[in-house]
Length: 249
Image 1 (cartoon, one colour):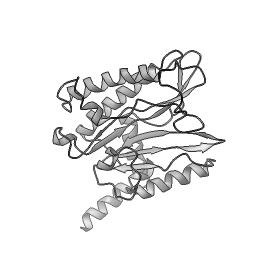
Image 2 (cartoon, rainbow, N blue to C red):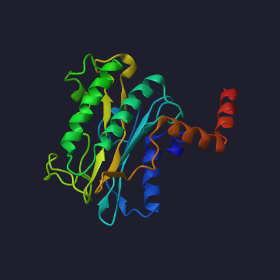
Image 3 (tube, rainbow, N blue to C red):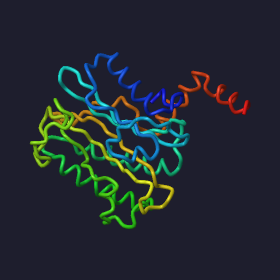
């Protein structure tokens, strides 16, 4: 996230993520990093990672690494330019709200299916309120997000496909909570929302009394993301550099 302002390139961010993971002890990546800038972020499991991220666009990064046979899976979405537009903020806050409310439902006895159904209700209502959907019962939502709210996580990234999402969660189980919306550039929604992809994915451990967010140290609040990006760039002197470049042109 920190380097995206100086190096707004999908390939560089993917390489940086792999480098940092292995420098910190990861044995390998759990899957090929997904780094989608702009409309590429609306492509689920996008893997080309070869485009420059345009100024003002968001970048969606889905990454995971392995250690001692166990995998991780985390997604964050942010604007490398340092600030969300009003349209991006409206969509992002809805995804963030859904993420937080879904995490609170993670407890022994609950199930991924129950959490998913709740998240769909929250998303449909929110997307209708901001004008993406025409009504909260529209089937169009599933075209904007055909995935589940999450999956089991362990020795495989999707661990395991043989365990039903209806199974009651037990202490010690790790799942992901990953609400998102993926709006193609040609989709029938107001133009301001087209070509935007946003996902916020956390790893959640089910405990005896509830849950623990294993990825809780990764910023996901807008104010924290913008502060991180802008304070970091000031520390590098990028504001002066950008001013000089603008003056020279």
